[in-house]
Image (cartoon, rainbow, N blue to C red; front, side, top):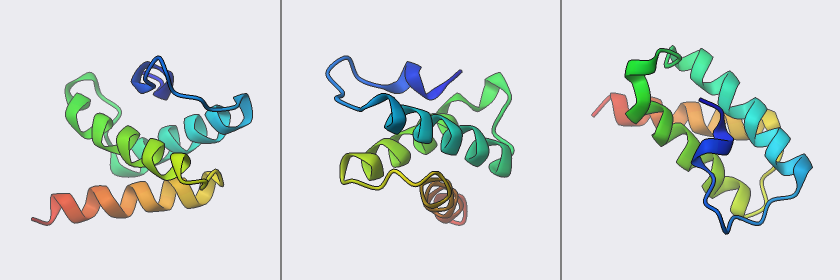
Length: 78
């Protein structure tokens, strides 16, 4: 499921931003091994983190990916 499916209808992202978020989402999900259909909750957490960072202006793919991975790992360690 691509990140586009998590975007709200009123999300105002430019195509380049959506592209960066999509790449970061795919890379983060791969790094976290949350690519199977039964990992929907984890994928939602990753998508939410990436979208939240993009809303405040972070659109660098590597930074989005790294921050999403760190956030997901922190949740896993609880």
